[in-house]
Image (tube, rainbow, N blue to C red; front, side):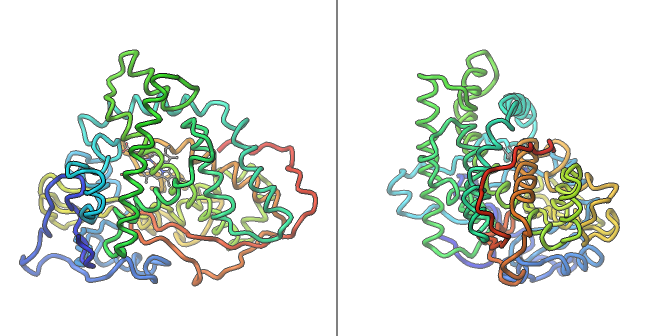
Amino acid sequence: MNTEHNANHGATADGSPKSKCPFSGAGAAKPTTDVDLLTREMILDPFPWLATVRKEQPVVYLEKHDLWLVSRHEDVMSVYKDMETFSSANAHQAQYDIPPSIVAEAGPDWRLPVDHLLNSTDPPEHMPLKRILVQKFHSILEGMDEWAIPLANRHIDKMVPNGKADLVAEFTWPFVIDVFARLLGIPAEQTGRFRAFAEGWFELTGSSSLPEDRIEAAFRNFLFFERFLTRVVAERRQNPQPDFPTLLISSQAAGAKLSDRQILTNLIGFVVAGTDTTANSIAQVIYALITNPQVLARIMSDPSLIPTVIEEAMRLRCPVRGMVRVTTRETTLGGVTIPKGANVYVHIASGSRDGDKFDHPDQLDPDRANVTRHLAFGAFGRVCLGAPLARKELSIAVNLLTQRLPNLRLAVTQGELQYTQSIIIPSLRDLRIEFDPIADAAPKASSPQAA
Ligand code: HEM
């Protein structure tokens, strides 16, 4: 098991060969830094360092992580545009070998269920699969306000009389999990491990310094989830329900080119891609609003601004910081030659704060004209499949929380925030807030604006 600090993207947990650092023993011409992106300071606020990097070494090799960091908006877009050169095949590989206890339980042939996962497939498999998933997924979101607003209000009802809450434990995760339970047709009492599963995934794939017990727990959750969703799919084949697994199964039966394995791994992938991301986004957007009280006041007096402000807060606090690619050929980016087989860390949070693209990039500006150019949901062919759902959940959350929690304020300083350990999604573990308590917890009748 590799628990050393120098990351080894390309480990064997999914069965593919380990890739070696492309520069071990190579000459000194490459732009290199020994910065560690997993220190507490860097997880909390990497942006001052990134601003310098964008100016001085926009494409730089990170020795400690064996990754080529791409930091400018323009270069990030180039990576997204060229899916042939920048493959996603290693985007979701664990950085650790499978622990012996898991091998003993699952058998020597067990691999992480990431094969045929949309997020890590490349052309030509990628787009035909994406078309089917997009069509089915978006169709199931119709009329979502009707059932999702009451789900959100149920959690806020419990918070309202208390005057304080941990927004992450009491709202963002419970709400996002409720939404997913509904989409997957799973009873709420069977969702207890969703959070640990999704957070564990991004730690396993986005950190090389996890303690052994966390590595073991994360792999165990993978195994549990694969078995759990295998049972769900088998059940739906027997007994169709108005849910997403049934939609995929019925489209397969109707002739869509969708294998059994694609159904299973993409259902697993949706829980991963759609929960930690959205829970963290809601927390980050609320954090951005509370720390910019003049913007908060503006949206409270004019809620029609909320969709734009959400986009701007996503730009500023990009909940997904970056993604990993592997080069399929030697290539040049930002004037730097990257060899074939190199691991590339495409920093979407840095690109979204690039001063060449956005004026006063470190400010939350509700009037920003080009706000939609942010990269928080990826770009081009890899643009987030779940963005319509995420935007809807964010809109519901921001509307209701700002309407129903008067005098919303933080009960922590930025320095006290705790994050999960990942360069992909460092996720807020908690967000302590305070507000004026209200004895009558009845939800307001008004409906959130669509994002
Ligand atoms: C606010 C919440 C979310 C954020 C910030 C987010 C962000 C992203 C980003 C940055 C990518 C590009 C990944 C890459 O470059 O490899 C992506 C892709 C993806 N996201 Fe999301 N996501 C969110 C919510 C969701 C939800 C709710 C779902 C599904 C239910 C979802 C499913 C996916 C899938 C399947 C892809 C892969 C697309 C492809 O490779 O073509 N995401 N997301």
